[in-house]
Image (cartoon, rainbow, N blue to C red; front, side):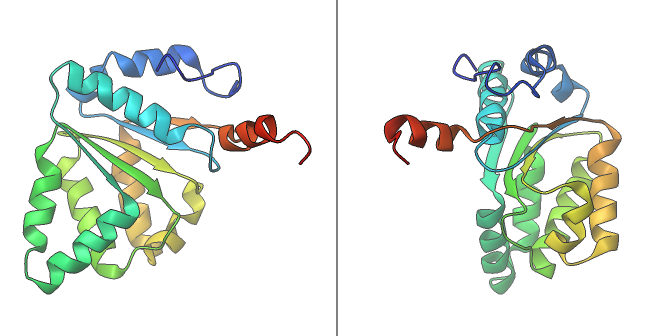
Length: 179
């Protein structure tokens, strides 16, 4: 967390982030949603909070949305999808990174809904997305499913809407100021 530049991302409330670092949200089964365009520090914050959770003894799982979709597709073909769902319900904190970069197929969207439903008020989720909530119907290919997912995620959640410039683009400009 020491590397996160709050001055570069003034839309991120440092006090709220520090509150998340206490991990009390995990004890309460609450969620943290980090929304914003690429490069603004969503994954950095998610991993920082998760690292603190691990330090405090919480069981934690991390997966990108794309890897989750691939894992669900393979598990469905081999009849192991219930195991995948069970595995992602075990940890006290689940981090789902990069929701929105790729669409979910019906099998993985349904599996994610089951995981979120089973974790509801029992296991915390940190989720990062480059899409606003209104666009989630397109991500999951089903408006009703997206609404049900959001209903459970948002009921007990802290949302960070990060608006700002990309760290990567800033670094690129510093490395090559002529561009």
